[in-house]
Image 1: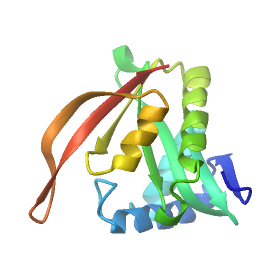
Image 2: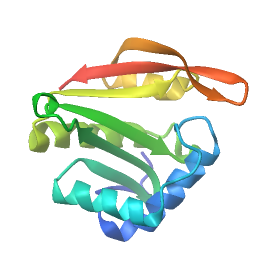
Image 3: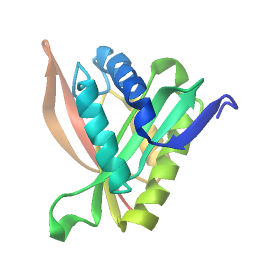
Image 4: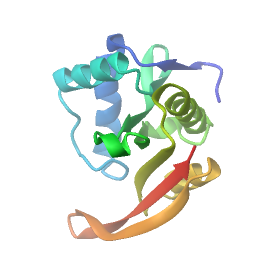
Length: 166
């Protein structure tokens, strides 16, 4: 990972930067299931809840701007609170430099230690080979496939379901 990249736990002062980063990745229409970011108010509410509940939400920052993010949110049902869902995104010109691995490792360690998460799951588009390889390198395994789960124009993409016990 580059020396000018800093990984930090989330706080509200970066809410606007998070919206911008999500917007950049969403506009690629390849890696996120949305094409527009949430509003700044929604981002602030999400960050505030994550901070208050001590959920793992980490940013990779360059010059105080978010270039990647990773969060793990516990399931809302009592009998499934030991399971968290991982979300991740990174601006394209920062991919392939170890940032994703560093972010995910911090979030996974935090989830296990602070949130009593025992299992983490995620979904990745099958066309996102880099994302799938990153997850496999961190011990996630493929648990299933949702065929034609995403449609952009006339193009379909399968969604790969992955999981890991921690």
